[in-house]
Structure formats: structure tokens, C-alpha cells
Image (cartoon, rainbow, N blue to C red; front, side, top):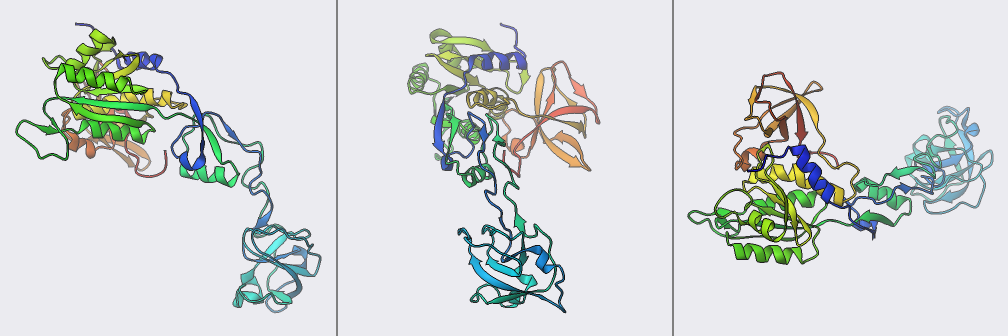
Length: 418
């Protein structure tokens, strides 16, 4: 039996065989979570013109120098500036113009008096424009203004190539008049689970059967990271049916084929056999726990990653091997999960394989600590739902004491955008 590959070697082999996909131009309303193929550099200042940050009156600040409640400054109102208009007049000394939030500052003015600091503030700006305004406190040049280019100036790089667009990013692009972006095409992935024991989740449970969890678990992970799932389903442990499904999937224009189960040493594990006989099996079995029975190769010239059948093993293997491949396809700048250091709250043990233990990560006074989430069976999805991290034990490490520092992959962030 061939020697087990290290995790890093298996990752390297897979990534060397994966190509970054072509790019396409799409409208920004369709660009959520897509990865940029080129940097975005603005040719526009933001704001594009100096504008008011408040409802009030555009004035020359020097006119308000001696204003007070007891002795207000009285200015003549010469015009009105709603948002979306371009004032054609100039504000001179002794004058003011009513102005709304976001409206451009007129020539001559250098500040805005908020309406609350005037006699009109009592009535609000909804009243007809009066002939004069009384100002009760002094202001400085620049008060209540958003200067042109305050947020950013032309020539600023907004996002690098490979950046995954988030809702605020798309809002910024729209504000700068960028209606389309060049992005990498989304990877098209087919999922096939195998096993006579599988039932669709919509069917009532039967003796000896289990519901197909892996298809839905893996599809959720991959869709969250930008993949398009073109096919998803399961077939029984029938060599002909499995071969036909693999043939159909591979011929459908997919970029990656992922199978679940059928790659171990069981009498009915046909996936590895089919890939070996009718494709190209590059490697089989990795020195990790959970997830040892991992296979990689090509079938009809489509890359295929064969994941284990146990749900937790399939999930962990997906994060460690499939996601980096997906990220490379998608043009991401970094391919692997981010890890952090944490201290153990309890001793942990392993069998010497590189281990990914389901864990609970806690921040205590700015320091990270980690403990096991529960029983570590490779089929225990319930414990996985109670986990927020994978605790990593390197190969050859069979135990670590409380307080030892370990690497941890945080999972399922609850806040923010990725």
C-alpha cells in the first residue's frame, strides 16, 4: 500500500493541477462575493465637489465672528441650493444662501451654519425662504462641509486584483460611477455522493438508511465561497451507475468534480476504482485525521477530488483541500484558511496523524484560548455545529498539555463580511 502523503504535499499536488479561470465583465449589481480580475483605481475624487454636511446656510465664516445669542448677526438670504442643483450665484460678505445636505457649496462661501444655530431653526427649513437669517454663534471656515476629495482622490487604488467584493465595496463603486467590473468566472462544480444507504432528506428514514447530509453540507461550503453547483445528488453503490454519473458530470462543462465516499478500501468503494481504470488517479490517502481516504486525479480531463464519506471528514477535507483549489480558480490572492495562535484550556491527544479537532475558540481579555467542542467522531455533525474552530495538531504530535500554544482555524464568523 502506498505511503500516506503529508497534507502540505497533497495540497501542493492539487494546486499545481488547478488553473485560474478566465475573466468576465459583469454589472456591479451581480458582483457580490465575486473576485476582481484587475485592480480598481478611481479617476474621480470623492466627494466630487465640496458640499454641505448639514441643512443650513452657506456663508462666509468671517461674517459670523461676533455672533451671539444676545447680538445675532443678520445676513441677507440671496438664494436656495437644494441637493442635486448647481448654484450659479456667488455669496458675498453680508449674504447667505439656504443649502440642503449634500448640495454643492456656492462660490464665495467657505462654511455652513447649521439651521439649528439660526432663528429659522425654530421653524425648520420647510417654510418659504425668508429675506434674512439671524445667526446666534460664530463658525469657522470649513464648518459643516465635506471637502472635495475628503474620502479619496483620483488615482487611489480602491481594491487589488483578487479582492472579494462586499456590499460596502459595491456601494463605493456605484458612488464613483463604476457600473461594471472585470471578475474571474465562478467555478462550476459538480457534487456526487455515493452509497446504498443514502436517502434524500425529503424521504422518511428507513431501516439501514441515512439521509444524504454530505451533498448539502459540501454545497453550502462551496456556494459560500463563490462556486456554482451545477449538479448535486447521490447514487447507490453500483459501479455502472457511478460511472455513468461521472461521465455525465464531466461532459457538462464543469471545472471541478467532487465525490463523497467510494474512495476507501471497502468492497463497494467504486469511485477510486473507476478513476484509476478510466481516468488518472494522482494520489490516494493522506496522513490526516479525520480525512485519510482522500483521492485526487482526473476523469475525462476534469480535476476530481474524492472526499471521505463520513460527514465531518468530508467537511474538514473540503476546507483543507477543496477550498484552496476553489480560491485559486477564483483568482484569490491567498488560497488557504487563515490561522491564529491559541492556548489550550485542556490537554489533547492524537494518533500521530496531522489532526483537525472540532473546537471552541474563546477570547479572554484579548488572548485566544481553545478547547475541544466534544466527541471527535468523524460522523458527528452535531459537535461540528457546536464548534467555531478547527484545532490543528501537527503530525507526530500525540499529545499536548493544558497551556500549550496551538494553531487554530477559526470557522463560521458571526459578524462582518469576508
